[in-house]
Image (cartoon, rainbow over all chains, first blue to last red; front, top):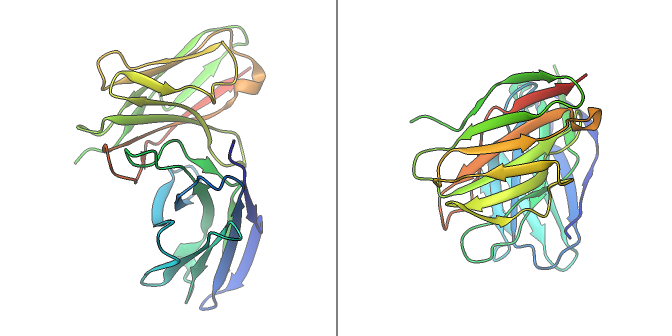
Length: 115
Length: 113
């Protein structure tokens, strides 16, 4: 089955700086890669996703890049703000034709924005 | 509109008891997923329904875990003879057929003592 590795487990950056979180996956059949943000005690919320037919996607301060050959994808957050502090999870799934199936998640990155 | 809801939000069970966790998906969402999230870990896939059909149950950790969605809307995850290692947050998610985004519920925190 799929295995998703995520690094780093904790990332501390100064407010206003950029943050990068990296993930690798093992199953070449995976073709859908979402990123979720989870605040303490809350539900995971989708912040951005990418499908394997594109290499990069951007939404305001957030961007995701995908390298299918190397089987890795990354989350980039620019101009970080205190409200970006949370745990971020990458995930991978196979789209078998009806939208993605069950997600395989990484272990998470605790992002801390220092004021 | 209303999001995914789960009940109860918190459940304490003595080891050996049976528990039932409920998920109400977003209206019209045909796909429903259950995940288990241990403390400090990412969610782990348990099982997946499309309407009332359970298409994948490969993530259920043992035969003590059973899920159903008899009318294709509300789903129940049942855990028999709970063990301490079952302590976790159980998350339910739903999505529209043919779409990608999964919408998560708030979870049920199960503590087995």
